[in-house]
Amino acid sequence: MTSTLITNIGELSTSDPDQRVLTDAAVVLEGERISWIGPAAGAPAADTVHDAEGRAGLPGWVDSHTHLVFAGDRTAEFEARMAGAEYRAGGIAVTTEATRAAGDYELTRLLLGRAAEAAAGGTTYLETKTGYGLDVEHEARSARIAAGVVDEVTYLGAHLVPAGIDADAYTELVCGPMLDAVRPYVQWADVFCERGAFTPDQSRAVLTACRDAGLGLRVHGNQLGPGEGAALAVEFGAASVDHVNHLSDADIDALAGSWSGWDPSGWGPARAEEAEPAGPADAPGRGTVATCLPACDLSTRQPFPPARRLLDAGVQLALASNCNPGTSYTTSMAFCVTTAVLQMGLSVQEAVRAATYGGALSLGREAGTDADGRRAVGSLAVGHRADLQLLNAPSATHLAYRPGIPLTGAVWRAGVRLS
Image 1 (tube, helix red, strand yellow):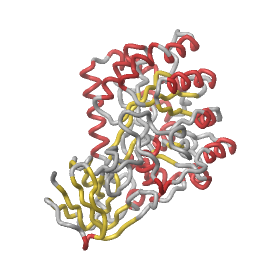
Image 2 (tube, one colour):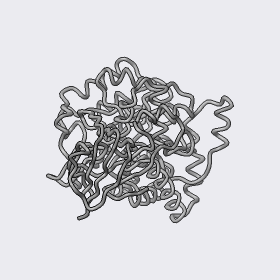
Image 3 (tube, one colour):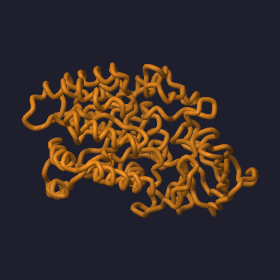
Image 4 (cartoon, one colour):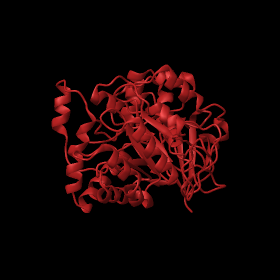
């Protein structure tokens, strides 16, 4: 097993529960794991040495919310929205038509290209959803293709009710034959609980069926206005509620209460490969992560989520790209971090943590070391997976200080250098 010493790191952000920021640091990668972290002057020998030359180091981004399995283009919709048209959930239907028409080879090629683009920008752990098939055959196909490319797959048959189909009948399809067809390929289930998509009662039926099928739960909620998405997520012990633009005081209190008793210093139990995704039911004190999608909010001109209030209330926060063709066609997690700092009131370290450890927490992958073989991602510690990026800058602050500049200089995923 070969080892690599990355030394002379000017600033190293670990994104661990202690949120350490080390200076003049070094990291040793051994196989797929981190075997040592500490002062550069005390670093052990390794088979190869990479001199960071004072650059900043941080964990690879964990993008916990994307929609990457699609074909087609929605430029016209974007232009109309920029001219003042209101965003509505129905645009999903345009992508559904193009995705159904594309062959397996084309969908796989497009997905691989988007995943490679994300990796080049520092993303080392990637979730994606189905949701542009919206029938049994094409949802199962999307899940199968996604499972061969990304790290975690989420079933989102409950993305939109296709035109001409009764909403309750379609909900039954999502909860029955469609769920059975995708189940071999997915770890999670999601529902778009929003006006123009699925009602709270329909969302509750989807969440119940998917929970009973052994899937971890996620919710699209509170994006287009006040609603029951966040409350449903807490009620069902969902791992995350995503968007969260319009939260009431009661929603924030419920999300904060879901973390009561959680001890981040314990890192929580690791998720075994064959087990269900971690969540409040199997990790005492673990609550529902609030996932913010700032690139989407810019594109749809929605108000940003109350990230500062959520953090101050004790809610665990994640940032994700929401890469999709209609409202957030970007894989750049650095852009999301920049926007969170400049527009949402987060510090650089808070935003970096949300885009690394926060995403891992929402996927149940924040824990696990040598003892169980299920290595944690999203943070840098001995025994965790060797996912690391170096910036062409002396500190992470440059992500916001120099907005729009591609700063990712080198990326390692599971100990393998990607760029």
